[in-house]
Length: 382
Image (tube, rainbow, N blue to C red; front, side, top):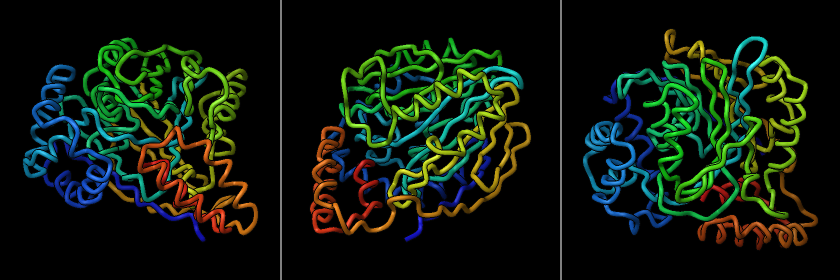
């Protein structure tokens, strides 16, 4: 069993038009099925979603209207794109922002099953400001940098509950469209509610860095150093399930930063365990490492065997096909399935109802000796 593959596309389109429409037409059927299967149709109405967008992020209202029009103008598309109180979703990440010899860098590993990532690096100017980043939910961002010299990256916060708020990828888009510094981004994220617990790490061209722990429904904690994995120190009391080794990865980052490594040396560490995760077939592999230089408005996408450099003022459209090797635990496990299934039931509180049902099905098969790790990873993306 191999670890799968992912096509990464670099696309430049100042204002959403034919290229974005092509992406919508390709991706919307899968997103629509995901949205409906997870109760999106019973969520807030189009009017409620658009009113929330106008209240909290008015600068994005014209962008949302344009994208909705390109998408056909339907209510379901408008609600999906607004991401007001969306279905639950999550992924694994390790993030750090450092300033030292060689400047300031924001580094992140993005961990997920290959089939669940869009693989799109988009350069745009939707509100007049150049923005370049990795796209999520067709217009949101998991990480990116803007022409003002601000970079940002997110990581799931490790808590399953939801509250009234926006999908975090839209918050990331908003920050990079409207903010030019770490203090401005903190003010924006303090004001706008997130629908789930997420960690956001920031860096700007002046060398300022920060990590924020966003709480469901609004509120945040400012944390030091500027690193994040997939739990929240401000809210975690006692032992919690840790399927992604979040605490181990954070402890490793803390040790690395105590040595004050130059940014390039730190980037090398992101390509090695425990930060770089090889279980792609199981849904918990590192899909890419991103290294942002906010002062240069530049990004390097890294993999163990290659790198791809892009800059806002020297962006080149193109494509890379990345094939992932199967990592430890990717194959069928004939023995110990019953014990493993019993242990994994402790993870159910983290999951949505569809995710918990998927985990239950997986555990039933595991008790018979078959462990489909790809299915296990998908349960945590429901």
